[in-house]
Each structure stands twice: as C-alpha cells, then as structure tokens.
Length: 93
Image (cartoon, rainbow, N blue to C red; front, side):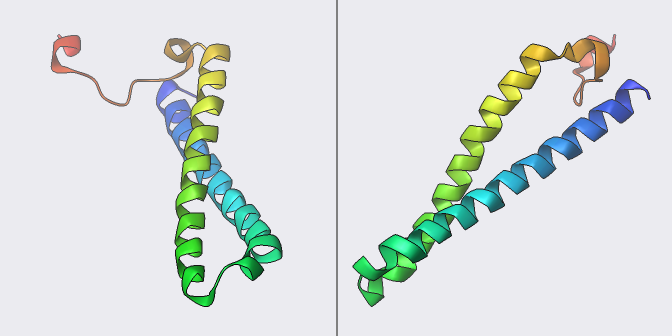
C-alpha cells in the first residue's frame, strides 16, 4: 500500500473510532441516567437532562479521541507512512 491509501485508511479508521466512542459514551451515560438519576428529576427537567447527555457524550468522545490520537502519533512516524492531506503552495515548489 502506498502513502495515500494509508492516509485514507487512517482517516476512515479514526473517524469510525470517534463515532464508536461517541455512541458508547452516549449509551453509558443514558444507562446511568435511566437507572439512577431519572427518578430524582421532575418531568420537565428530563428533556434538559437528555440534551446534557448528548453534549457530554460528544465531549467525552473528543477527550478520548485526542488522547488516543496523541498516543498513536507518538508510536508512529507520520512522515514515513502517511501522505499529508493538505499541501501548501510553497511546499510544492
């Protein structure tokens, strides 16, 4: 495989990982909410709690993704295996 294919597969894999972590965080927070917190809140506050769960799941996924990507970047030489996605005009010359 060449560098362009490696780059495409890395971006697709990272995107899939991010979506998976978001979904897992959402279901985990929803499970915690339905089993423990839902009984404590009044009816009107439940929609706000659901909105907060969605936002918290995205925030958790963002943090997990950043730390995971930082770990992978330390282990892999990016210039050796991947082609840059965006090349500046100054670099082409």
